Image (cartoon, rainbow, N blue to C red; front, side, top):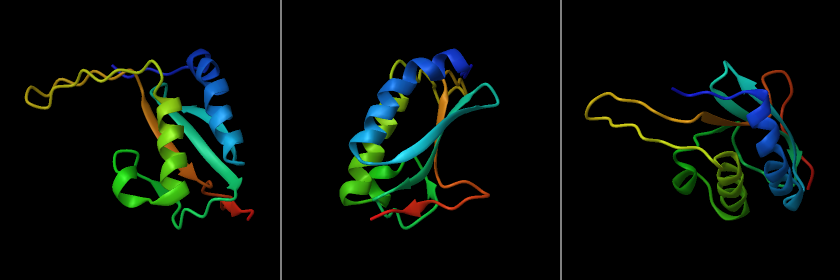
Length: 113
């Protein structure tokens, strides 16, 4: 069963912040419904061209520095996670889910470059 809490988020935060800093990005971390680690990107030099990121399809939906950044961010958010799900038996076992938001519902992402 997926589970995320503030303690786990805080352990992952330093690695995530290093990735954000390397690319000049500003963002925040949050936990939703005790199951999802969320990174809200606030501003940075990368123009994503969208406000949503499907973390399962970063390779095919993004190119260049946006793709590079999102893949490294995803890797940092997944440190220590597991996925032992079996679709054939409807058995789902993941450590936690992740979500990357480009901006928030009440404040758009700001491209600084």
